Amino acid sequence: MRAGAGAIDDRKVASIGHALQQASASGWNGESYTTNDGKQIGIYFSSYYLNDPSIRASWVPFLSWLPHGDEMNGLQVYLAPLSQVTAICGAGAVGCYSDYDNYLVVAGDRSTGVPIEQVLAHEYGHRIAAHRLNSPWSSEEYGPKYWATYANVCQRTAQGSAFPGDEGVNYANNPGEAFADTYRAYVVSLATGTDWATNVPFLTPSFPNDDAAQYWVATDVHSGWPGPENTSWAGTVKRPIVAKRVHETVRVHGKRTQKWKTVRVPSGVPKPAFLTVETPLDGDLEATIENAPNGATLSVLDSSGTTAIGPVGVQHAAFTICGQRSVTLSLRSSNPGSFSVSLSKP
Image 1 (cartoon, rainbow, N blue to C red):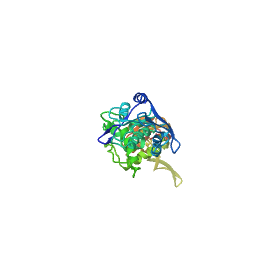
Image 2: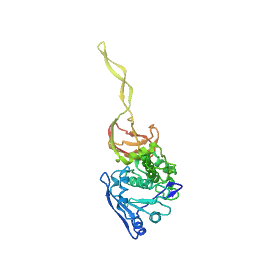
Image 3: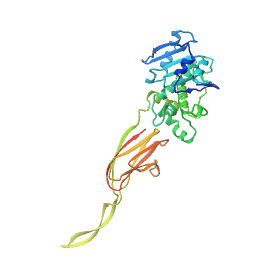
Image 4: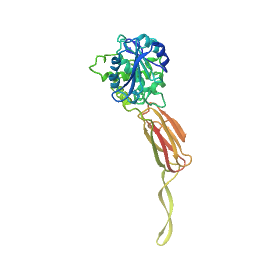
């Protein structure tokens, strides 16, 4: 995390265990604590700080209060002077996080221009992302499912205005950073009346930071996307009913005679079956024919059911939902009969 123009920036790195040891050759002072909901966390101070267990323990209530789930368990928090933090996290950084190590590092100095609590909140946002789902994308880089869908991360990435995982020149358009800073803003919104809930500029202003964005962050924190929803689609493809003139033998005054009559009978190629699939979340849609007349195929169409936007004429249709809030599945067959299709959607 870097401090620039008052905003919170950060570094999300693969591993910082070695850098931690190098930065503090004389070691770290700390121990394990239990949060108020039974999670085990470690809090460690640089040896440059006073070795006072009571000061370290004073951070436990704050960390316990942060909106969290089971991912809090096992977190290791390190506080160090800014010079050590930059040696660990990179030039200009006031904090960083590595999910590989479970290490969260922040500057314990009150002179960085950003409250320590807000730096901790931003970095903890990265930990939440690392422990949520957003397949087929990385939740750490794209953000968790609910927030990422609301923030149009898939569409923006395709358009070239969002850069997942870019900790360099496109840092301010990195959705992983946007989620972490929206989480920080959400935490601040819950902390009215505290001396650290000061106004800190939003790190990634091209992403939404409104009430709805914070609502979806909270949903990702407290619920999280459970994974694909599996359902099925069953029906029958039937030939269209058409009118047909046929001869009919009747008796008139005891004599057989022929007359024309109109009947309605099935004829021709069966009509396709259509299903509208609501897709409130971005992610993978899959449809597979389980049983159907020979030659039956699936196609993925737009919400109007008129234009193909995905696979056409296949037995197994796989399509990535990216901003489409509904799609249409079409099943066609040259023969009539019943069918069943298995569905999986985000």
